[in-house]
Image (tube, rainbow, N blue to C red; front, side, top):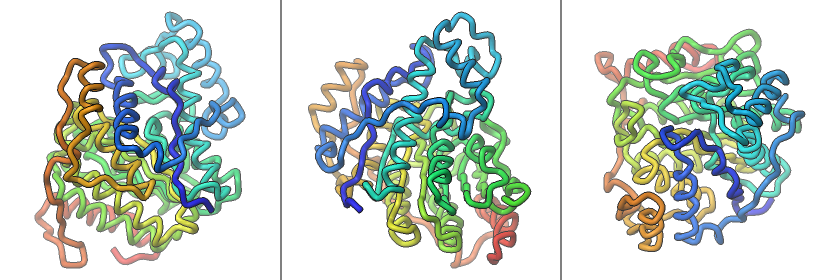
Length: 390
């Protein structure tokens, strides 16, 4: 297996563009790739463009009638009337929607194929992580669910155990739905509590159905959770589950919208904590996953200048075994690019200057603490189903 990471990138993914007033501005992808290049990470990893996913691949998760509907509104956006979730404020139709969405899906599927076949151990598609798309509908800025498609392709290739870890501020509902009854896929989502945030799912009691009971794990975090609580929740649930499940591949989704500057959510996590979870995912891959197979995806993130590019550039650096010093000053060349594209001033350093720390669950918990209540609810709901102590 090659020791060089693979970075999936095609300039055309920036065609995934809902319009100038939409919060999911593709400039976040352009600026991330610009920062990756400014740090020379495009030389530390192999930059590869995969082909767009065709219908046979899209059908691994999505209904053909939905794919056909996306293709129709892609040709004539004015025909979108809200059917299949297309033409809504969250998912307005745009020309080329099918092509751009299928291309992003293709990068995640290509990443999964590469790690499974041993062409690389780690592959990153920060344009991916579009985890809300359902089998028959668009949802939450997501047209095709590239994360679910990557997992489904791994299963098609013969994988018997795939773990999916989602740390986006929003519940990874589309991926959970796709594998609700499939014991071969362990889905774990840490997100803001559904009482206070879209999509209003991801309760601790959602644990999977049928043969997949115990394969869906949800940690619903109180609004306002910061670094210490977020990291405590992650480390109180994820390592133990991976140690038990022993996946053959780990797929992770790293939405940057947990950040305290994100305009669409209510957590208070720093870049330093996001980077710490990325590094922990890398460590867990090498400890618990066959061959260190890791597919890392982007996701949400709507502080498109100050947060997203830095967070995902750290992710690329970690996956490429070329981590960026948190104390590093952002290259001036990239700050010039930020100003040229956005007329905004870019951030001056690579993190928020914090030193994240947390108390391990094994040290005890406070039954009156809201964060600990959330973690305990998850452990009580799902751990016994997997033969683990709550």
